Length: 348
Ligand SMILES: Nc1ncnc2c1ncn2[C@@H]1O[C@H](COP(=O)(O)OP(=O)(O)OP(=O)(O)O)[C@@H](O)[C@H]1O
Ligand SMILES: [Mg+2]
Image 1 (tube, rainbow, N blue to C red):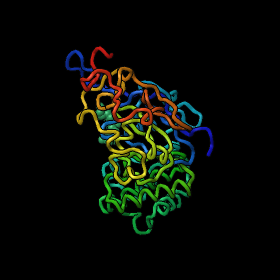
Image 2 (tube, rainbow, N blue to C red):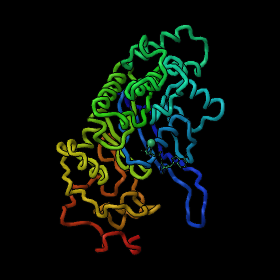
Image 3 (cartoon, rainbow, N blue to C red):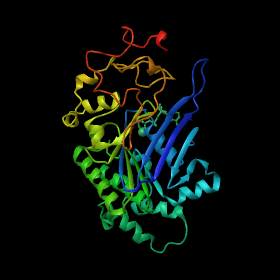
């Protein structure tokens, strides 16, 4: 594997304009200081519960949403410095492609499959006498028979077929990076595995890097080289998928692993290690760790945002005790200060 990342997102923030309805209401931060690395030819899973900023990260990476801060380097180029014509040109080239979360809504219902798959090539412009051939090749690549589906419209396809059309549309420009926003959430288990295996094969056959966004670890079904876990618009951990599943470095990741039974068996983490302090999270301290109000290991330092700490090779976690947890912290010695069960004002 090459040592230079294909995509390096550093400290990315995205803020949506939220109408102020009185003093104290902040703007909507959809992403806060998110960092992510994707190396050529690898599959990276992005895991996070609903509203944690996954789609926002994907949209910002392809240039559909302007970041408020941070950098996005792709193949050595800083995309956040591209403006106007340069940005449009980069997007037209289709070197990063996004497969949207909802294929039925993102595919124009009036267009045939051939038009839908050919559209990115039209956008890229230039005379291309091989367009029809490229469309058919992309369709075959995703396991669809061009002769059967070419003239159909999205409503005449099954959910799994629509997902494949979205994929064909994304790979037709021969991108280096494919970002799939929840490609399997709407599919049943058998279709889910077919699509994940297909992504794995596309990565191998076409040599592209693939980012798979999902709600939970189990929907990755063990496919992927690395994983990035988001919680409340922040990256909490990223690392090798196998290592993270076996020995999560962040208490939130540990919670996810422990609550995915089939994965938990492989892990050194037992559900008891990570039981929550409180089932329902309160309002996160804007300056502190996003998980602190649910974490039984939280202590005074957690009122300040932990930096991403290296815990291994290409493995980091945003937790003050990442490198020490859980070995040095026995179940009987919670490190919270005070006995209120939450951080008190005095701790901050
Ligand atoms: N266009 C928008 N305007 C205002 N707020 C938005 C907008 N899009 C997203 N948000 C907010 O930003 C946050 C992150 O949203 P995002 O769609 O990135 O989450 P997600 O992780 O993709 O969630 P899901 O798993 O439900 O798809 C949420 O709080 C969401 O309400
Ligand atoms: Mg989303």
